[in-house]
Each structure stands twice: as structure tokens, then as C-alpha cells.
Image (cartoon, rainbow, N blue to C red; front, top):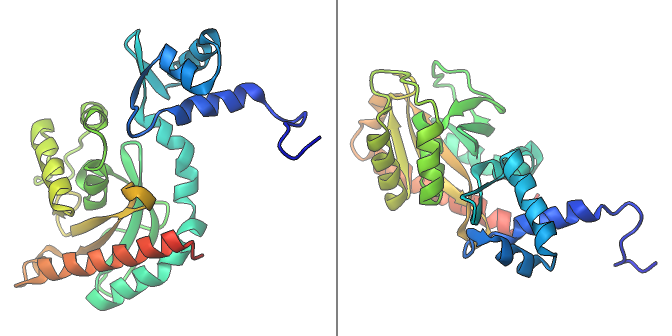
Length: 259
């Protein structure tokens, strides 16, 4: 048997299912049954079974003619992205960020309606929250959540806003769907997000995206601080610039494959 020939441990149906998933890409977000069959080289009946299995499991949606992947497909890659080993190389950058600005700094990844912290460096300026690696926070009320939501395709962003429980953590939390959509869109256009007293009254946060090869956003980095310190003259602009430099360093290390 050659190295390229499937062994008796090879699951052909599973392999075909993965091939169907990877058929959907940036330029082909919506496909017909025929499209999928042609692109994967399987019969229409096989493509139909695979697609409807994905629909049943919640990884795809259909209107009867067209098929598209749902945000749940991100679950398949989340365990990899959330692995602390993957982000170990970024720890020095986040440590340097926290030391330079004197504020707590973090990296998180988007997982469904929440963000999950994969790196966090606390400073001596202790904030009231007790977030650690693995902590989950609703994306709608967090700067890292919003800047990652801003990178979703419009259809997926609307789905998030329609299905997420927009809990009002403080009187300042944006829970109106229209206002939230507008805020997230503005954040995406400017390339950073600021959340002011929305998750906790004593906390403000600024975040920027972290991108992989090709520009796809895979995480976000942020600085958390007391709102009064964000009001200092020029502080917001300074923090955004430093955050962007940190994100660029992390992206470069990611591309270089440094571990």
C-alpha cells in the first residue's frame, strides 16, 4: 500500500463530509446541491445525504434550494483556537503590553454567543472582576466580543443579534438590537472597539482584532481599566496605538509559526 492510499482505518463518509464543509469558502458562502456535488466529485444523492446531515446537526442551513454553513461550524475549530498551547507564543507580547500600559491585558476567541479568555495578564491595579483563562463572557457586552462580531458576515452578525440573550449587566449595556448592530458596524469600520461600563460599572475595555494569514480574524486583544483612567487626556488614542502594535507583533509571530 502506498503512503497516499487509504488504509482500513480510513472513514470515507467522514472524509467526504469534511470535503463538503471545505467546499464553502469566502467566495462561495451559498451553494446548491449540484454545486456541492460538482465541487466534491460525489454523486448528487451522496451530496444530499451529507448536506442534510450537516443541517440536522446544526452546522448548515437550507431554504430548500441553497445551502450555507452556520456559525456553529466554528465549534469544530474552537478547541484548537482555545488551546493555551497555541497562544503560548503570544504570552510575552501580552506581558509586555500589560507592563507598558500598567493595565490588565487579555486575548480571547469568539465561541458562539460568548468570548473565551485564552490569555490574561493581571496588573497590580486589581479590577473587581475575576476573569482567568477559560472564563466566558457574553460577546455583546465586551470589547473583544464586539470587534470579533464586527468581522462576521452580515448574515451571521444578524443571526447572532437575533438569537443571543442581550443581558443588561449595567444601566449602560447596549441591549437594543438596532443600536447594538450599529455600534458593532462602527467598531468594524474603525478597526477597534471600546466598551465603557457595560459589563461592569467599574470597568472599561478597548480591543483590536488579531488576524491569521489572509486577514481572517481569529481572536482579539484588549486592555481593561477603570473608566476614570480612560478619561485622561490622550489616553484612549495611546492605548489603541499600543494595542495595534501588539496585535501586529502577535500576527507576525503567528505567521512565522513561532511556538
